[in-house]
Length: 294
Image (cartoon, rainbow, N blue to C red):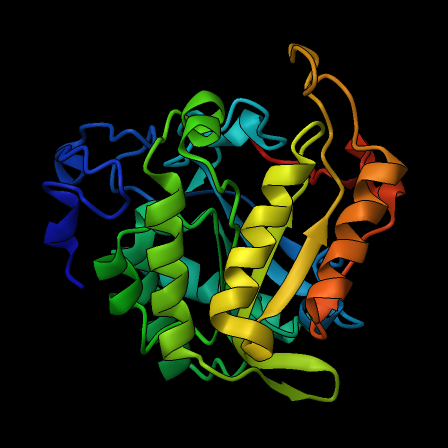
């Protein structure tokens, strides 16, 4: 994938067509200039990703979704942070590797995929030998995911919504359910069987399901759909960490209850999910939101 993809941008399913290469902002609030707000060891991912040392998480500014409840809204809705070149991003990857990172974890990377592909190649030519994790909201066009086949080792997508009306109301993206499922299907076709070594994932797909308060039934439907198609060839991460911003209205103005979360976990177990992760609900606090440079 070449940089001219930025000129009429269709990397995400917004298909906004902005000329980001020449300074126009896309729906993601970004030009083609990569900006990062944090690059550090991150120990709050799933155990097979964080391991003992942490994941080498690189948080990009901007986002193609813009969920109304986003916990990273201070960086997802504007071009903040430090501008980095492809060579500088490659150097950051190598520094994180040298600090003991088990992998390089690109967080909200969709809108910078052409540059990321180039940066990873530079880093690998420079000796990078740890997996690349693609941590995405999954509003990715399938052509974008296909371009990552030789770059990404572990896909870490969300599957946020089962219903179009919910996706429209909370992320202004009515096509999200079908777009995300198509993107995840392509990810699984590239990495059909998880590969683990010493308790760490080296290749595969981990699908995240963030339980929103008042949305238990829909999250069950989302989990069921993924399991019905992919079974235990993917990992399932059932997340209860929702932390409400101050301006939310009911039911999004509260945290998930223990009863809601336990019901989701029990439902997943009854389906037959064997490869799964759960969370302690005390992770639903602002203490678990990374500190960003803006």
